[in-house]
Length: 304
Image (cartoon, rainbow, N blue to C red; front, side, top):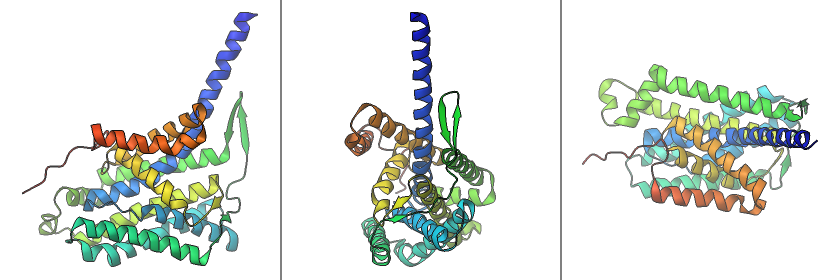
């Protein structure tokens, strides 16, 4: 009898562990997608695009508009959101960041913060109250031998992994990716090799912003109440994920997103939920002290 009870307890603990793993993969996928946007921009311009969290918010609101007024489902909303945020990212780069490319870094940082505030207040002026996003994915629940798995989790995790693998392939195995890596290595020498610098930078911003828009769709599908300030905290957490993995390193951003998701889920399991944000920012503080370039990041050699 005791052996049976012990076996049942082990099975329940294992199921609980797998259940929390699914939660980690869901929230970690969203963080990883946003973190990749930070990493893409930093990789080519050494710029922290602090408006990136608000691009994620814009992606969520585009999802709300497409689902509410156009009756779009998940995939059409995803395509529309990624396209719109990619175009917005290029517009921001051309109008706000390009003129400051040779300006002091502090000017670019202030501009990035200003762009974020502008996007927040523009959205606030249009839609001052939280919005409820219509159901994008059928709320189907699967029970596999005691393990509860929703269709929303399956789709978010699957689409995130596909997009991340596609980005990794693009950067590592294509000519465009080679050009992006060349700019990251030496921006001054790239034009001498015939690479269109401005075009590649704009494409990089488009890719990063598009991934942020996709994360907005995933978030709206999983947590359907959105507001104009939602991008602030989520954006900062994704920035933490990028720093943890090694900002500028694509695979590091992916790892950082899932690592932060694991920490948050663990905090919610073992501690009050009010400690979740505290632990996240404490992680960044500790990492900046002992390994400021992240897990996979490497210190850059500055040319004099």
